[in-house]
Each structure stands twice: as C-alpha cells, then as structure tokens.
Image (cartoon, rainbow, N blue to C red; front, top):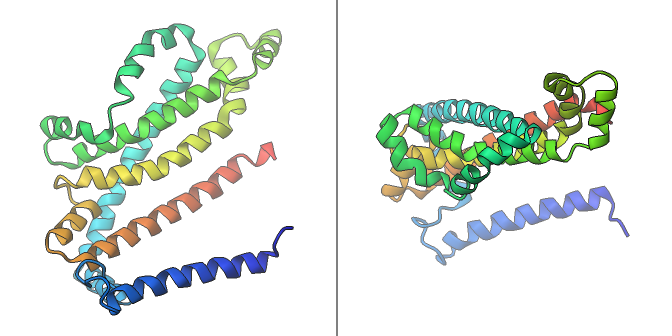
Length: 252
C-alpha cells in the first residue's frame, strides 16, 4: 500500500534530522575528536570566515570556470564522436580497439601527462575534466544511435531522406535525444568529481582549497567546501533537468 506523500516527506525530514543529530553528538560527546570530525553547528561560522575573506568566492569562481569549460567540451566531443561512430560501421570498426585500449584508463592516470603538457594551469585541469566526461557521453550517444529502430531509417529513405545529414536530423537525433540527455546528466556529476581530481595538484579552485585545509587539519573548512560542491551540483542538476524537460516536452 502506497504511503501518503506527507508521511514520506516527514520520514525523509526525520532521517535528515537524525543524521545531523548523530553527527553533532559524536564530537560533542568525545566519541570522535573535533579535529577529525567537526560538529555541524561549527560549520556556519567557518563558512562565514571563508566567505568574508574572499577565499570561498575565488575558489567557487575558479572551479566553475574549470567545470563548465571541461563539461561543455568533453560532452560535445563525446556526443559528436558517439553519434558519428553509431552512424558509420566503418568508423566503429576503425575505432573499436582504440576505444578498448583507452577507455579503462582512469582520469587520474592522465594527471602526469596533463602537468607535462600544460603545466600546473587551468588548461591542465580542463583536460582532466574533459577526459572524465568524454567517455560517459560517447557511450551514451553511441548506444542511443545504435538502438534507433532500423524501420524508421528505412522509412526516412523511402521519403527521400537518404543523405547522412538528413537521416541525422530527421530520424536519429529525435529518436536518440532522450538517452543522450541521460548521458549528459550523468556527466554533470562525473565532471564535479573530475574537478576535485584536477585541482588537487595545485590548480586554484575548490579542490586546492580543500587540500590546503586538510594539510592544516582544518576539517571544518574541508566540510564547508564539500557542502559547497554538493550544493553547486544540486543547482546545476536542477537547472539541467528543467532544461531537459522543456526540450523533451514534445515527447510527452
């Protein structure tokens, strides 16, 4: 039997309150040293210090720049190559083993090359984010295009849409846009994880600020930036879902 919506919301709120109560109790009761796990009641004051010092704003702006540029480039390249490969059996055969060799390499493994090629710079951070986002969108687009009903393509041919561009616009993109958008949404979260990895080696941003704070055992500052990243991702995800729903309204 389905529970009423109000009851479900109440239980969700209760779970959150219990979580924060347990978190508050651990350092307050001496079960965990506050240096290792700061109480949530200490976080607002720490956030205010970071905000008024200008460190929080600078870190957020730097990370957003890395995040958006890497996300846009990685997603665009992944979707474009995935669609092209899905439409061409020749291209798929040519790239098959290249993909098999490169795909298992994690994004962090590219950090040494990023530093060697671009130095400790925003370009190096963007490169790591692009690599992290590219494969998600590539496989989402590839799978979406390959799953398009062949009957639809034959129907398009019958109506004179025989060129690759015509098939792409008239059939393939409309039929595969939903799974491609799902891949783009997955890439939103992957890009945030890549931002931290990209900034840990010294590039200015949230990741660098977290490393600086952790080296000083300022765990309250680390928590501030962890929460910041979670909130930023939530805002970006909500905006993307709203945009997706508007773009896909015609499919409803």
